[in-house]
Length: 128
Image (tube, rainbow, N blue to C red; front, side, top):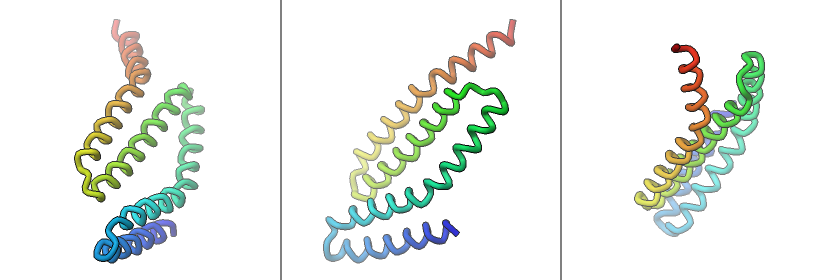
């Protein structure tokens, strides 16, 4: 089970980080980054399966594939933003973490404009 691997990596990394912070605190961030990268690599296979299923469903429902692409990019951006924000907060850089979070939200809103526009156009067509 993949979740057992993910939990194990997280717990081992946390123990390493706790020990490293006592002796070499500058290395703790590297352990956090490596553990995060390993966990992301472990879930990539599952993520590709989810993308295939969503793509198949959107084809069956005749949904514009560019909308699915935008939604997947926004979801990926949200995950990456959360990952970077967590790393910054773990490093004690809350101000930078907040700026990254704000930047990610603004970019996601900007990316959603085509979907919002299409939704409003649909509503205008429905309501005479």
